[in-house]
Every structure is written in structure tokens, then in C-alpha cells.
Image 1 (cartoon, rainbow, N blue to C red):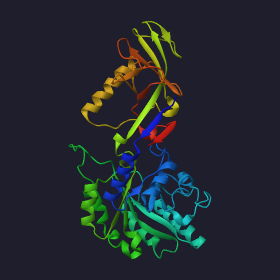
Image 2 (image 1 turned 135 degrees about the vertical axis):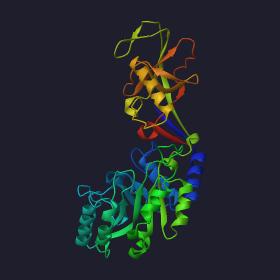
Image 3 (image 1 turned 180 degrees about the vertical axis):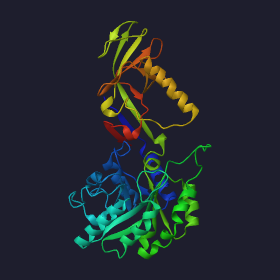
Image 4 (image 1 turned 120 degrees about the vertical axis):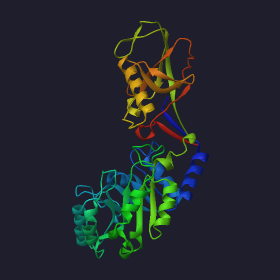
Amino acid sequence: MALVLHVDGDRWRAHLRGTVERQPGLVPVIKGNGYGLGLHRLARRAQWLGVDTVAVGTHHELPELHQRFDGDLLVLSPWRPFQPTPEELEIDPARVVHTVGRLQDLEALDEQGRTAGRPVRVVLERLTSMLRHGLPAVDVRDALRVVGDGRGVRLEGVALHLPLPVTRPTLLTKPSHVPEVERILSDPQLADLARFGERATQVWVSHLTESELEILALKFPGARFRPRVGTGLWLGDRGALRVTGTVLDAHPVERGDTYGYRGRSAPRRGTLLVVSGGTSHGIGLEAPTGEATLKARAASIARGGLDAAGFVRSPYSVGGKQRLFAEPPHMQVSMLFIPHGAPVPVVGQELDVRVRYTATAFDRVEIS
């Protein structure tokens, strides 16, 4: 009686192989909850794919991966002096590549490397239109000066974290990231990264499409683009994934009958369905979508009206329709309201569940 992620193994593995083959130098991103599949499982799968590097979200995720993947470990979050060191995490520092987005942090790592007598591997992140982390253009010259002789830090390239690809360009959105990447890489300060060694010519990028990568590879033949891919790799073929919850109980109710923690009244005749999956799994927890289209905004307004009336659409499908929550989800189960006349599943039956994989904790992951 659990919330289960079912994976069509053959289809999923074929998708992983195809994605890696189409994007040379691909770096699997393994972070957070492992896109619902688990960090440990994705680390082993990256080893199976034969890639040389994986990217983790934070330094604290390194211990979960380093024994299951034997290549390099790129940390996406920018290094700060208060981060745990690889030695403190009992990880070989030679395998860890730090992302650096502030000049003072680069200087601190340079001093650290000189003191240890072993250069620290770093990727310099440039500030992009994301405006999240990264070195502004005015700091690039000083950053490359710190890299200098390579005794304190060893440059492993430049990182660019870009916004998500625009699938439907509008007057307010850019149709391509190519102009921004071209502008940044055309900076004279970055024109001769090869002087710091072959690995310094790597350009670690996020959220570029395959066609954008092809264009940029032609424009910058001296650079080796390293696409960092998470969702598009692990969750790119949604047809290979299916989430189910189990019916645990079913109770017929008449209009006005009270139920649940809050003593709500049934709006009409129907059935209360108790199903596996609750807030501890991420069911019913929602983050802003950021959708900007009129259709998406209209849907948000409609949902808001349902919320105000005490009705919230659940992610569970019964009879081909997403049913309403009877009340807010509990920790491990949810209650649904099935109106009279709609099919009522039996106890033990599995229901399809629509979830946000990166925010869901499954009881089991079953890969065929």
C-alpha cells in the first residue's frame, strides 16, 4: 500500500543511452531527491553510462555518490568558505571540482591549495541573465590572474547557468540562448583559455538545446562544451515512467455527512476514497509554476476559485478524471471525493498519480 514509481527499464535505458550519444561530453546532474529516482540509483546508472563526470547540487550530496561513481564530481553550488571540505566528507579531493562565482572565494581556494601543496580544481562561473551566481565581466581579468601558475588552483573551464529553454517564444522571451553565450565567450579575456591547459577550454553549460549546442560548437571550435543535463536525461521520456497510489478504503456518504479531521460535510452523495500518498511524499505540496501564458494564468485563477470554495483538484485519476481532494492530504494518505455515478475503484486497486518528480518521495521505485 504505497506510492510507487514504476519505470519501464528497457525504454528508460534506451532513452539514457540515446541522450548521451546525441550530446558528446554530457554531464549527468544528480541532485536533490535524484529526480524521484534516488541519488544512489542515478550514481550507479551514470557509472553504467560510462561518463567521466557527474554534477551534484551541493557538497553535502557528495558522500551519497562518490562510492557509487568513480569519475569526477562537479559541485554546481558555488564554493563558500563555510562549505565542508572533501577531506571532512572523506572524499578524495582530487576527484572534486568546485564551482567558483566570487573573486574572494577563488583567492581563498588558491591560498588553500598552495598551503596544501596540491592545486584545487575549479570551474569559473560567469554571471548570466539568470542573475543567480557568477563572476561579473569586470572580475574575469582578476580571476584569471589568480589562476595564474596553477599552483593553488587548477582551471577546469568556464560555467554558464542559463534560463530554461524557451519552447514558445513571445515578445517578452528570447527565442535562443546562443547570442548570450556568444557574447560571454567572445570576451577577449576568455579568448585563450588554452594557455591554462586543455581542460581549461571546457565550457560547462546548463539548459541549452541540442540545436543550440551544435551552433555554438561551430562558432567556438576551440571550446569543448559540457552540457549538464538532469531533467532531460533522467525524466526526458515520461512515457517510461508511471506513478501509482493504492486504494486503501472506500466509504459511501450522503450529502451532509461529516468526515475527516476537520469535520467537513459531504457536498453531495458519493464516495470517500482513502488512497496511499500524502504530504510526507510531497502530495498536495505545490511550488509556484512561473507560467506566463494567458492560458496558464486562467488555470491558476480557476484553481484559486476551487481553493476558496474548499475544493482542490488532486493528482489522482479515477475513471479518467483527476478527482478532488475531500480534505487536505494527511501525512501518508489522502482522501478523495468521488461523486455518485462515477466508477468507484475497489480496495487494493492502483490509481495513476501525476506528480512533480523532483518534489516527490516514493515508497518504492520499481525498474523492470
